[in-house]
Image (cartoon, rainbow, N blue to C red; front, side):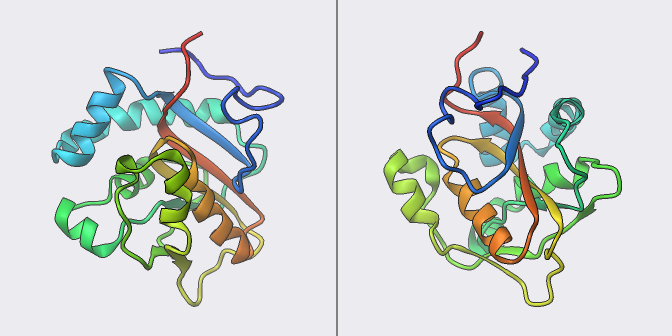
Length: 188
């Protein structure tokens, strides 16, 4: 697996897109064997894969070198129905296992609307699917804070983008993103 670096203009796929999150880091490219393992972890209840994923993620987080300290680690939330069906939120499992200094695990970002699975939709439909699907709990403490938003995969960035938008509307200073893998990238 390649070591990823931050390019001045971002990756080739993202250079001309406007994202709400300030920076993103990943552990790898979404292709076999990583993609196969992520699918098994998430959809076939292979939670024993969490430890190897966390090992990859911890190394990538060190390399990410986000420009400001992270106050909260926030997983992308699942709707309660999907979490009940799956039995767990894969993003929350990853988030709980990461360490960003003194950052605290936080679940004040919630999914308030059941949505179609993003994997079943076209790139154009993904943004519409998640629009208005997230909110923050009353009494949250995001104002002026730096947040690292955690998900398993970034494909188009629609989910991360919508979550980051909601977090910034709630007063977050910076929203960084971390994913296990980014889809649509080419090996160097």
